[in-house]
Image (cartoon, rainbow, N blue to C red):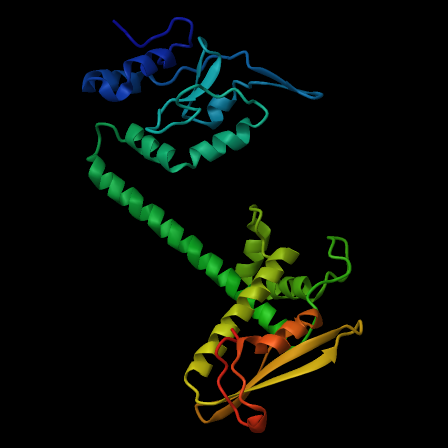
Amino acid sequence: MDIFRCESCSGGVCVQKIKSDAFLKLYFSDKKQVIAKGRCTPNLQLLQIKGKVTRKFNIKQYDSYNWLTGCTHSNRLFCLLFCNNKSVWKDTGYIDIHNFGTAAKKHEQSEKHLEASFKYHTFGKYRIETRLNSQIQIDIDRHNAKVDRNRNIFQRLIDIVCFLGTQELAFRGHDESASSSNKGNYLEMVNLLAKYDGVLENYLQSSTSSFTGLSNRIQNDLISSVASVMIDTIKQQIATTNFVAVMVDETPDVSGKEQLVVVLRYFNESEVYDRFIKYIDDRKSNWIRRSGGGMQYPNRRATQRSYKPSGLF
């Protein structure tokens, strides 16, 4: 007697019965029977109206996802593999037809689904420990390859940031739209390098995620990251030197607004370095004058002596 068959379905395994009998608790022979029967693929009457758009379930979706199964009792879609975690595909069933494609792909790529898929297709054929270790190694190799690719892309973007900063060139353009003939130095430099760099070209053409490294926010983040590394290097050099000269001067910007310029001059490894640190808003200058910028100043009679700042950073 076939205890898992449902007459109202298309001849496959009944989802409701599998859920109630708990597949993991079945005897080995019953598990083999379930796997041999395969999935139930009924033509569900799923209809969803959103605004002026009306969508219904297309039975051809079963061909696109070999793990997809339906239940006529609840009129919902399930994952035949029943991953060992809480999921709408396992517990309550899926009904959002408008977002079906995105949700199905996300579920198909989840770690739990991949593990369940592996167990399903290798049931009774291989030792699970050996196969899992192999799959884990494949996942690790894929992850490492993706990390290496991202690092290579970031290295190119960082080099562009350093080049523009060294040449004192503006990053942004007035019009950065796709139809613009001049999108700004940063974007134009990226596109120029992509012509001769296959790695960068493939990344820009194949990138489907929200991150491409071209937005103004990413540009600002890269600039801040480069500046942070430079400041850390200066800190390390100052920590090993005996004398530091702090030069502070007031200068207006292009709009005529006064601002303080902070420069450090110090001796390190037989060389003298002049390091520009930052501009400080003149509105903060009174606070700096009162507090000394967190530094311990020598007395007025020794203003020409150099000293080490205790709290500039």
